[in-house]
Image (cartoon, rainbow, N blue to C red; front, side):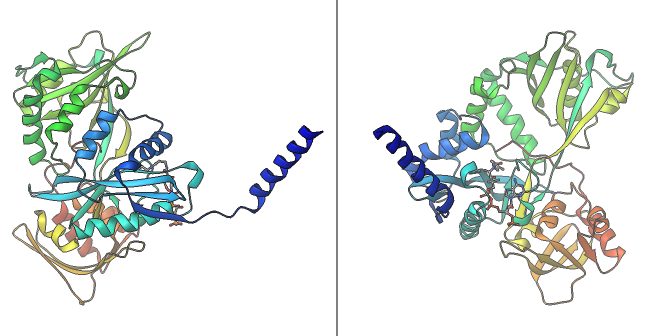
Length: 420
Ligand SMILES: CC(C)(COP(=O)(O)OP(=O)(O)OC[C@H]1O[C@@H](n2cnc3c(N)ncnc32)[C@H](O)[C@@H]1OP(=O)(O)O)[C@@H](O)C(=O)NCCC(=O)NCCS
C-alpha cells in the first residue's frame, strides 16, 4: 500500500514536470578554468570523441585571453564556443591574424533555443575588440554558418587512385630524393617544409611547434582504425599517411601531402604509387593538383567527393580586402549585407597594379552581396560568375561580374593549412 502510494506520487511529480515545465533561460558567460571538465563532456557528447587531455591542452595554448564562452542552464554548462589565435596566408603572401572558431557545441538537450546565436554574438564582439580582421572556421554541417556571414573559402577534392593500374607518363621525370623515415624523428624537417608551403599558399596557417608535437605524438584516438603514421620525406616535401588494412585490399590514406616544388610533388607521388601491396591511395587535393597529368590514364584519379574546408567571415572588410593582391584592375562599389551579426556596409574597392584601396562610401552600389559571398570569393576558390548566376551576387551589369572574376582570380589554389 505504502509502496503503491509512493509510486503514484512519483508518477504525478514526473507527469507535472513533463507537461508544465517551461524552458529556463540560457545565459552566456566567459569560460573559467573550472568549466573545462564540463566543456570536455559537452564536446565528447556532441562530437562523439573523448579528446585526450594532452591534446586539449595544446589547443588551449593557442587561445588568446577571453576567447571562450559557455552557455549555461542554471549551474550546468550546456554549450560552448571559442576561438584560437591563428595566422592565415592570403593571395599575394600577406599574413593576417585570424580568429579560428572551434569547439562549437550545444548539448542535444538544449538545441534550437538560440544558444549558438547568443554565443556567436558575444564571441564576435570579443574578436572585433582584439581586433581580428578576419574569422575562420570549419563547419560540421554546411547549413549552420552562412547566416553568420561565413562563406566556404577553400575547396577540397577527395581523390582515390587505383594504384595497381597507375603508370607514369613517359615525359614525367623520376627525380628521386625521397626517404622513408619515422615522422616523429623528423619534426624539424616537416615543420620547416610546411612553413615554406604555408607562406606561399592562400589558406595556409602558422602551426606552432606544440601543435607539431601533438600531431607527431600520433595518438591512437585519432588514427581512425588506421596504422601509426608512415612518412615519406623529400628536401622540399613530405607525405604523412596511414595504412588501412582490409581483408582483400589495403588502402593508403594520406593525411598531409605537402610539396613546395613540382619536383618534390612528382617524387612523392612516384613513391606513393610504387607501393606494390596497396590497392588504393586516397588523398585530399585542390582543383589545381596535377596528379592526373602525371599518369598515362588520368581516369585512375577519381574524385569521390568535394568538401569545403575553411570558411571565412570578414570582421574588418577594408583591411581584409586591402591585404591580398589582385590579378586585374578593378573599380567597384560593393554593398555588403550581414543580417544576423550586423557587420557589412558599402565600400569602394579600387585595385591598381595588383594592390587595393578600400574605403566606406555612400556612392551608388555596383554590386550587392552577402558577407558570406565575399568570404567565398576572397581566396579565389569560388567565382563571382557562379554567385551571379545563382542571384546571390547582383551586379549593375555583367561587366562588373567579369571584372570581379578577373581581379579575384589567383594563381595558387587556396588550401587550408590544418584542421582546427
Ligand atoms: C550546431 C549547433 C552548435 C547549433 O546550436 P543551437 O544552439 O541549436 O543553434 P541555435 O538555436 O542558436 O540556432 C541558430 C540558427 O542556426 C540554425 N541551425 C542550428 N543548427 C543548425 C544545423 N545543424 N543546420 C542548419 N541550421 C542550423 C537554427 O535553426 C537557427 O536558425 P535561425 O536563426 O534562422 O532561427 C548544435 O546543433 C550542435 O552542437 N551540433 C553538434 C555539434 C556540431 O556540429 N557543432 C558545430 C561544429 S562546427
